[in-house]
Structure formats: structure tokens, C-alpha cells
Length: 610
Image 1 (tube, one colour):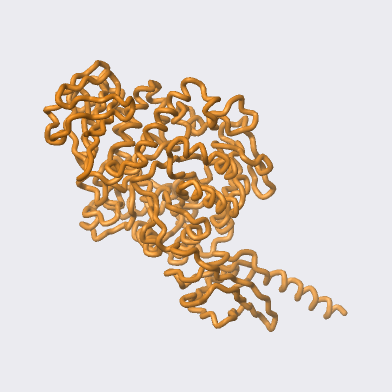
Image 2 (cartoon, rainbow, N blue to C red):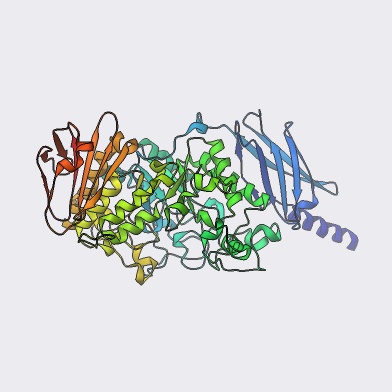
């Protein structure tokens, strides 16, 4: 009896330990270029089993690590139709099974067209945008609960809140939405930004479900809106389930344990940099709560590639914005990027390369001649124009003409465009969720008009930050929460809703109406999306430039002076040519190009030439 009881207990323990807790990716698709899929099976002592698979599926490789709770099995799905098949796991004549699906791929999925210069991107933080489903404000499977009274807490915004206001984006004239990350972040505090992710195959339950995210994408496409996912390749959160039971010691960078990055991204290409400094930049942790992923580990790299492709297919995505791109292992991140763009040749990816020199940023754009000096190609289609942001942050405060102040800073930014392989595919912005709020730096509406007109008419892809289009402000010096406030009207107990035109106050209407008019005009202007640029050295703090192609020309005059200026059009005869008049798209005023142009202080003219 004692022997039988021991057998029963042993058998019970074995059957429990043999159960699979996770399978990632949870399924795949037919007809993928990435047809060899490395499937992670996770469960207690799973690696002690032998594995076979049904339906003539080919197992190419079985990888075990020092942690017996992981098994990486690669199958070849090439020329395999959508179907369900079964993995069989066997140990000591005991077996269990795990179903796996190969799904039908959406027609023409490979040739999806990503965001580009014809778009105007609206950046939002979902927790702070709108609460469409109060039932998920706090959830059992996440630690931090909703507390709208705490500025740095979870406030309850979610995916449903975005879906509920898709008409707002259309009214504004935005064509794409970039949401900060939506995958689960189970940090005990300050998890609302969601950059410390704890499960990268699962939408945070306080935002909704994976199906809700796919539904958001579907509803957006009905309204001709594109969805951009904020993807994090550099790090995960300390609460990530895999960090708590590492597949390999070198899945993350260890020193051992925590080691702080030096944030000196220049060491990635500095020919004089010490190996120690370069290594600490790439391998150091961004912050202590975000363990740094080792992309040079092939298992890690392939995991990130497959996860990214999985989300593109599952949620029918139109682009990625990649967080802290230039902190990754630069050789590995180029492989990650190339793998995705090989699978989707027209997909767009913009990387956060937060540097303050055009040559250093241009190094990271695909086919950079600067990178080629070191035989490096990131394959990254787009970078963020932080030097333009730097110039904007100061230029409009400097209202008097000077050698190196005011609009000359804007002009000088574009003089370095020769460094970039593709200037049309650069993200341009006045602010984002990490910078000082523009309306705090510039509380005057006239400055907002100047800067917004600039990014709407110059080369590149304009990006707006939520709330600025209604005059929202906030001082970053008071903490990140100050620049990430709740959008008015996103919560049922808000007094008034800025989503609704009739409920906007005078200031909100002023900002919104200007932005909307500008963006709606921009939508159909191929001369802005793909035209050439010719600009002139600013005079008296007035910056004039032209966007033109073979069929049309737009003349933009930005007067950053606090006094009225008179512009001699003969100075611009090179571009004015035989055009007789210009129609200002903001005021509908007709300007005679044969005469001098008078422009008000702190104002802008956007002239369609005829």
C-alpha cells in the first residue's frame, strides 16, 4: 500500500510538472517568409521530455538551455497550409499533448503600406486619454490599482476609450495613431506608461484584451486611420515572467545583476571610444526596474523578431515606433529591423534616436553613408528629428534677429539634410511624452501656430502630442505626470468634454480649429508629402521656404519677429518665377506676388501659388 501510494504521489507530481504554462508565439501563420518558427514551451522541467509533432510537420531544431523549464522547438511551416497540429511530449512512457495552430494569413498582408509623409501622427498615452470601460480600471491579474487622485498612478484610460473617439481624430485631421505601449506592465507603481513590460504577448488587462487591440485596428481602418505600435526592443520590466525565471543567464545583460547604462550613445560609432564605455552604453540597464535584453543572444533576438511579426499580423499594424533604439546591440537590432522589413517591405519603423547632432542621427537611418563608413547599416527606415525639436524649443523665444538665434536655428537644422538618406521619412515634432510640453514653453497661441505650421509644411512626417491641439500644458520640471495629464472629457465625471466641439471653451476652440484646418489641408497635398524644399536664409527673423514639384508650389513665410515685417518678393524670384498670386490657406487672403508682402508680427502665411 505504501509503495502504491508513493507511485500515485510521484505520478501526480509528474503530471503536474509536465503541464505547459506558456507557448510563445501562441500560433503562427501560413505563407510567411519567416517560415521557420522557434516556439518557446515553458513549464516545470519541460526540457526532460522528448518531442514529436503530427501532420508531417518538420522539426528543424530542438534547443535546450541551462534552465530545464524551457524548450525551444523550431518547425518549418514553408508550403504548409493553415491547420491545427499537435506536439507530443514524452517522458518515461508518460505523454501529454499541446495543440498548435497555423492560421490563414490576411490577403496581401506582406505588402501592407506603413505610415509615411502623407500622414499626420497623433501620439497619445492610453491611460491618460479616455476611459471607455470602467470595469477594467483595476484588474485581479495586475498589481497597481486605479487611483486617479494620484498624478503618477493608473487613471483608467483604455483601448475602448480610443475606439470611442475615433471620430475625434478624423475631425482633427490626424491620419495615424501612435499609442505608447499597451502590453502588460505589472510594476507595483508608475506602471501607467507601460514601458516596463511584464508580458509582451498580452495586452495589459487594464487597457483591455488582445482582441480589443485587434478590434481597435479594425475600427481604425474603417475610418482610414493607421495604427502604430510602440515597440520596446531594449528592455523589459523587472516583473516580466521570464525575468523571474531566466531561460539563460545571458538572456539579459548582467554585471552580475544590475549595471547602469552611461547613456552615451555616441560610443556606438565613436572610433576612439573605449570598449568599456561602448559596452556599458549598449549593455547597461536604462533604469534599475528595466533589465536590459541581450539581443546578441540568438534566442533573444529571434524571440523579439517573432514577437514583432506576430503583433503585425495579429493586430494588422501599420508601423512601429521603437523605444530607445540606439541603446540596443547595434548589430543585433539591425538584424531585427531587417527581418521585419524583409517580411513587410513597405512597413515603416521609426526609431527613437535621441541625439543632438544630425550626423549622429543620420548614422541610424537605413542606407546611411555615414554608417557605411563603418560598414554598418541599421536598416531602420525612419528616425526622429530631435535636432529640429531642440531648435524649436528655443527659436520662437528668440524674437529679434541675430546671427545664431531665432529662425536661423530652424534654417540651420535643414542645412544638414544632406546627411540623411531619406529626409521625407523623418519624424518631426514639437514635443512628445518625454519632453517639456510645448504650450508650457510657449503659452502664447501665436507661437503654437508658428511651430505647428512649420512641422505641417516642412519635409518629413509630422507628429502631434495629445492635448496640445486644445492648448493643454504642463511643466515637466514638476514630474512626468505633469506632461501626461488626463484629456478633458475622457472620464464620465469630467465637467466638459474637449472631444465635443460645442463643449470646448474659447481657448480650446482656438487651438483645435487652427490645427484641424491645417491638417485637413495637408491631407491632400502631395507637394508637401513628397515635394522638394528650397529655403532662404532668414532675414529679420523671418524664415521663408518653398515646397514644390512639377505641378504646384507652396510658399511658407514664418515671421518670428514681434513687429510687422515687409517681404520683398523679388528676393525669392528663383521660386516665385511666373506665379502671380498666392492664396493663404489659413485666412483665404489673396496675396499679389508682384508687390511686397506685409506679414503681421508672430504670424505665418502658407501660400498656394497660382
